[in-house]
Length: 172
Image: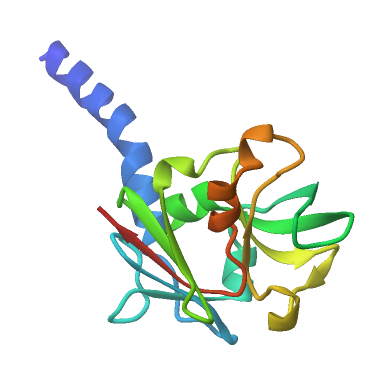
């Protein structure tokens, strides 16, 4: 009997973090404020028949990060705050290998989800402490810490740096 209990304990030790993250991924209520982004595709979370719609407060409830960097689209350095793409992937239970991010004007770019790293792209909703309007590249901008990592200063990554994000879709 003893080996059986060891197996159960090992199984629970390995499975509980996964089950916990999946349970969390399904807990999004419908947005109370204005919808800011629609997320669909290979995700476990949903609050609509077609996927997940989030407002700004729901994004603010996710783990928050900030960094200061210069960009090719702004003057000087700016401090951005928001949700790391890797944290969004975990929160919505994304299991796709690619993510397509689409802007309000339908510009879209696809990248592998493996690009979402601890020191990687962030869905920023604040720039220098202020909410970004559509005119100011908001409401969401996928931004990289360009000054912190020379690998992010290339045309491919610049193409991933989409602003005015409206939709995010995960796929295999």
